[in-house]
Length: 134
Image 1 (cartoon, rainbow, N blue to C red):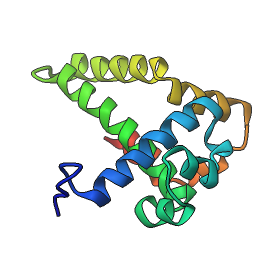
Image 2: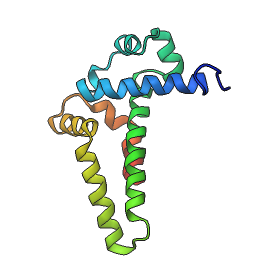
Image 3: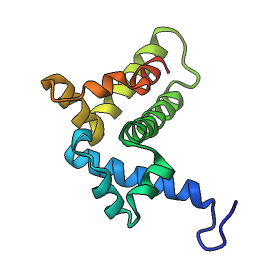
Image 4: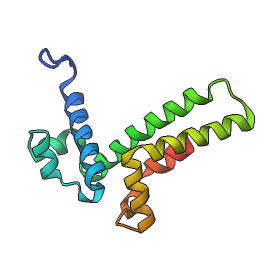
C-alpha cells in the first residue's frame, strides 16, 4: 500500500533502507562484523523492526549479495547484447570481472574468502551460485 508520506510501500521502503545500510556497513567492516543492533541504530529503528522487514543476518546477507549480483548481471547483459559466440562469452567474463574487482563489497568478500577469514556462511548462501549461473 502506498504511504502518503514516503510515496511508496512502507514495508518495501523499510527493507530497502535496511539493506542499503547493511551493504555500507558490510563493505566497511565485512559481513562477519555486521551486527543487528548496530544496523538498527544506523537506520533509527528497533532490532525487531530489522527482523520484521529484512530478516536475520543470513537473509540480510543474501539480499545484499543479490542486489549487488543483479546490478552486475544487468551490466553484463547490456555489454553482450547483440554479441554471439566466443566474443559474447569473453565480453561477459571481462565485464563481470571488471565490475567485481571495482566494487568494494566484492573486493572485501573475495579477500576474505582467499584468506579463509570466516566467510564459510557465504559459501552456504545460494546467491553466489545463482549469480555465477546467471
